[in-house]
Image 1 (cartoon, one colour):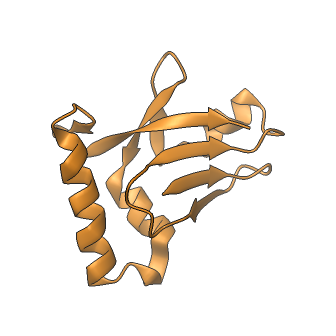
Image 2 (cartoon, one colour):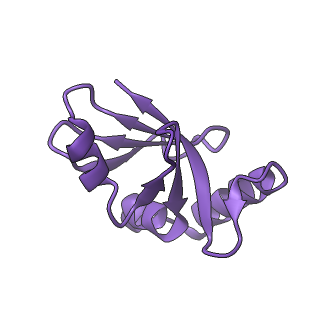
Length: 102
């Protein structure tokens, strides 16, 4: 599953049915400032810029009407599988994702 940030700063959900990976990929033309703005309301980057804490509800919104009960169950299962590695913040419900800059 990829949260792709386009060159114009829009977030899109790519490979939405791929539950074995989770990352944020930014278009190479996107400036660091624009990238940070694009993540507003979606994710909070770590200071090192290598990972970000993503709001689960934001991912569900990106999925839109295709977020069927089966998709939601698979998404929740993916989140549960990374909890033991410290990639889930139970305090605010966010999940950590790698960041890749194009």
